[in-house]
Structures are given as structure tokens and as C-alpha cells.
Length: 300
Ligand code: G1P
Image 1 (cartoon, rainbow, N blue to C red):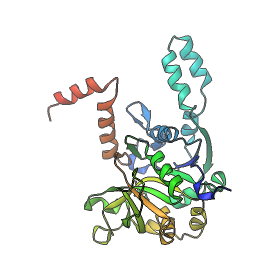
Image 2: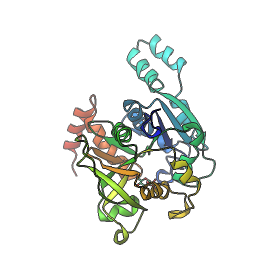
Image 3: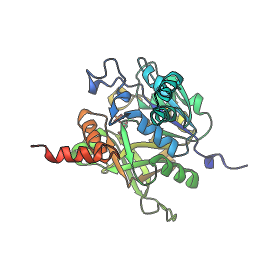
Image 4: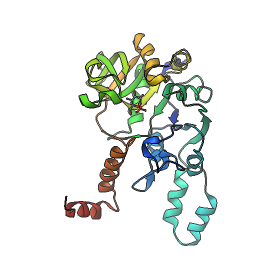
């Protein structure tokens, strides 16, 4: 029998139950995840990363007032027929592809008890297999899809694995920060950037941070993490933190960190959201040229 830990990573959990208070009043009636960056809702970037990473089943952990997310990823036959009739097959294709890539399931986190609790809400749907977690606020932009990189490391090493990035001192209090040492791994695909995680601290002050490597918002985890989450007590901010359950994996030497080589864009607050909009707008194949010319001409 193949060892359980080497199973393929087929499922991904996307926690989307947050209230999006940083974006009020925009998020009074619209989920934060549906705010558009250029021409796609923020959450679609994570869904596209899943599909590009070979994920077959996406599990959204939603909350109240999030039905727009379900509608967005559902079929829209009337809209497609309307666009086809009006001679807009390209737009009809764009609409169709949104719901095409993977099976999607929804479960609810009825009370906001933290990220760890949100992931635990997906336990039944994930079952006894490894899975990815993607925090949709963060757009990860690299040569290889970020989740695929983690899935490949998991499939080769059987260890849980997270992407980390270097974080400036004044921002470490916004991240889970790892304590780690270089991992003993000979695989030329990643041996220079794999760390063995010894411990993690959620949102430490700069003077208590064990390193400058922050958890970037992508995880691939073994199903045993659910057992740890069940026993995780509220931590930082009174919430059940995924970071605290990861500490248990790290204690057993079963957690690796990969220093992410691409670019991360955290669109989870207004400034980051504007920066992501400008940067992705500048790169947009259709709008980019005109937008860059417009920005150049701005009198600052
Ligand atoms: C969460 C995690 C944190 C991680 C961060 C990345 O925090 O708890 O460990 O570093 O995402 O964006 P949040 O930003 O949801 O407060």
C-alpha cells in the first residue's frame, strides 16, 4: 500500500468567512472576496491558482452574507446564452470558465473563532487526505503556481509545508513568524530554500519575533492537523490560530517552510489592495499599455 503521506494533494480549503471590516463601507453588503482587482474578484485569483496547481476540489468555508461567492462560481446559463446571442462568444467563454476548473463545495463557519477554527470546519469535506489552504487576501505571483510548489514538496517529503517570505521589522506583528533552520534536503528543485520549522509565533512584536520569515498564506498539510486543531485553545487575539496547530507538527519535525521566490501581494487592507490593483493593472495584457501611460503622465 502507498504510504498515506505521499498521497496526491487534490483538495484545497479557502476560508472566506471574515467580515471584511477593513474595507467598510464597501463590504457592508458585498463580501470582501468579491471586490475586483482589475476585472476579477479578489478570490478568483486564489481559485485560478488552485486550478493551475492541479487541485480538483475546492472547499470554501463561508459565513453569512457570502452568497455572492457561491453565485460567482456557479453556472450562469442565462448570461452565457445572452452573450452568445449578442455575438459575444469571448465573454461567454470567460463566464463559463469561472465555474469550469474544479468541483466546489461550501461549508459554513457560523461563529468567527479564528483561522484555525475555519480550517477545522472543512475537516469532514477534506477527509483523510492531505490538503492545501489558501488565504485569498494574498495574490501569489511566481513562475510555478505557489500551491503546486507546496504540493510537490509535500508529495516528495511527506511533511507539511508552508510558503514564507521575508518581512520587515515593522510588519512582523501582522504575520505568523517561524523559527527555523536549513532543512536537510538534497532535492535540487528546492534544497536551497527549504527550512525545517522548529516553532512558530502568531503576530509577535518585533522584539519577540524569532526570525524575519513570515507565513505567506499558503499551506499544504497532512490530515493529522485536524486532530491538533481540535485541541488548540484560543491564542493570539482570543482566536483559534492555525499557527498554533502548526507548532504541533513542527514539534514532531513534520513541518517545512519554503522561502517563496515569486512576488506576494497582500490585498487584505486598503493600501495593499490599491497597490495590487495598480501593479496588476499595469501588467494587464489589454489595459496595461494605456494604464502605464496614464500613470506616467500623472502629476504627483
Ligand atoms: C493570517 C495568519 C498569519 C499569516 C497571515 C498571512 O493572518 O494567521 O499567520 O502570516 O495570514 O497573510 P491574518 O492576515 O488573517 O490576520
